[in-house]
Amino acid sequence: MPRPLRAAVPGAALLALSLAALAGCAQDPAADAASSPSAGTRTGGGTAYPLTLDNCGVETTVEAAPQRVVTIKSSTTEMLLALGLGDRIVGSAFLDGPVPDSLGDAAADVPAVAEPMAEQVPGAEAVLGLEPDLVYAGWESNLTADGAGDRETLAKLGVASYVSPAACKAPEYMPDPLTFDDVFAEIDEVGEVFDASDAADELVAEQRDTLASVTPDDRGLSALWYSSGDDIPYVGAGIGAPQMIMDAVGLENVAGDVHDTWTSFSWEQAIEADPDVIVLVDATWNSAEQKIERLESNPATARMTAVRESRYLTVPFPATEAGVRNVDAVVDLAAQLDELEGLEP
Image (tube, rainbow, N blue to C red; front, side, top):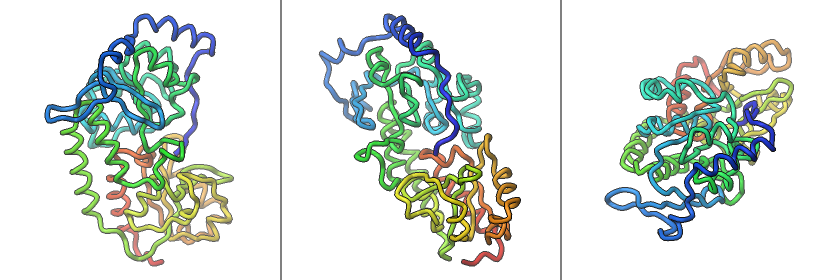
């Protein structure tokens, strides 16, 4: 789900010079690749390197289990924390909010997470200055010449890159629709990249069990997933994480017929749909409370049944993008739904 984006980068010319200057101290994977297999496999003893992956249509090779990682977005940072790999993070950036309580202790032990290197997308010079062997990004757009560095240039400097597969934009790579199997597949693949497949297997098994413990609501309740926007609301559409989560909770998405992950949705459409509940994304830059005030102060939206009856569910922004928090979002929203009184479609 998009949020305000501003890359903290130097000018293009300075960036080019910075990359060139740092190239001399970064390892060159070409020499090793010439005498090594092109792809790794998982064996009884763990991942065999080098490991080559087709990631969002970009071939990325990991020469060894990454030890110095820059994570961009909460989804990637929390993935490593959940796998017990927080000690590999040398820089984090563009975090969408605080980590959940379940990862609080793990995050407290990682200075690079406690004090992120940038509030938004870091510049390539800052990223390379940390001498990472992998940059793990939540969005493809994080890895550009105007952002943390384009993937081809990073590879030439000996820095592998990996983008959350759920965020791939090319039609042949974008999950359509996103499913929990896709989320669990990323956990498995990240485990393979880091030679931490046992931890990934354990995490996936735990999340599958938790997801299976939720009984979807069977009342046919409709919902609007309200992410952001004032004059024009931006809402969860039919093939992304919001739809996946609502399906698991048992809510019918009023924007579910829009074939996209997120979409602009007019207030007229929302009012006509008159959803039974409204799911409010709670973000530091656009809180659930602000959204409620907006809905209740506008005479048109104030007439909606969910607004009149205060039928609101809330979900933290970091749980709205594909990652290790999606299952917990299902559990939390199901519990909130149970607490709403007198709710009938």
